[in-house]
Length: 429
Image 1 (cartoon, rainbow, N blue to C red):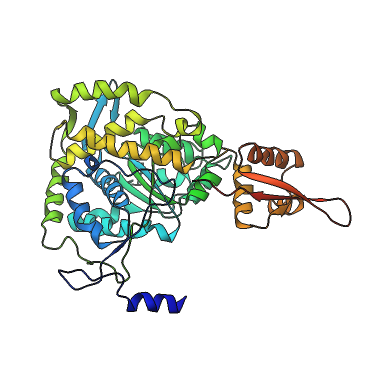
Image 2 (image 1 turned 120 degrees about the horizontal axis):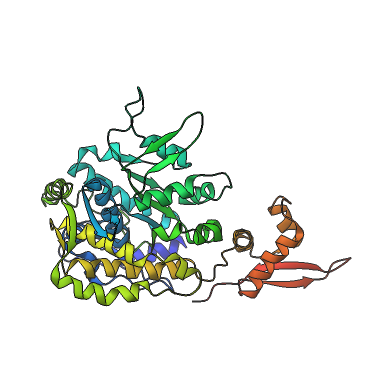
């Protein structure tokens, strides 16, 4: 292997950049079955200009930079801007989860660039940043209203970044957990409350935004049918993220230096915080009326449940694009930008959950089978589950995996009864 690498180096691969003489970045092709990238309209305006400067200098996916930038900007803008549909106010707070292979997808690297820019634009950004989302009570306490001698939270804006979003899904799935209903209320913009006799707490006007990172395997395993059905996960944009190029020595650590984009973003965010009600521009209404029936048309299966809030996500994204243009109306260029990013999120949801059963036990077994290419016996599977589940429940999960083509079984002769070996079915392109 080392000799092969050396021979490639001696052969001059990859060739140097003619302009700089430095090695060029090596583009990586998309894996088989990867969702088609978003239309160029998604990179509209100021966010697009920022991504254009940052993206060539990182291995991270431009979609990851763009999405986290939009969510972070919406978090800092706060509740001083909104779009109204009937009695419902949509503020620029969004939830997004980046789905990709662990460290290879460069999810963390993409956020590092965004965090650096946001801190330059608004030094208070770091104080509005949090992690460790484990309970509804903890979130409410962080944003609590004043009560008695307790001054409460002075600023109700909060951006939560969870590099291990699987832990949030695990916490939300616990029977006594209040995390799932609290997060659903937070995305909806409703008051957050926990009613206990010892320490009641309430958070009104909370402005919560979330960025999560997770692998496709973890999402399939921990996204239980309950969290899909109750609407927690369809409040998140799911976006497939991958490493798009190789930069052995990295890119420019200050790609936005001397561009003026950080200062421009600072001015834009400050102005947006007091925008008030944002409406559809007259020449945008026809496009919205045309696309709205398509957005509300439900898809089949789990994908349909994960994309059931298409129209709400689209209008929130359009709102953020408009605010970052310094506009007080959603203009014709803002809605196509939002639709382009939403379309990618919908494709990503279908990819991320493809062939998923929605059964957490089946997903746990499938993850174990994937890690064991030689297969596992029923006894080994029961041991894996710590023998906490009845045999009938394990049988149900195995039947689900077999019927969906994700696992197969075979008989292996032994000195006694033949052993039943289960193996994961290799994914198809």
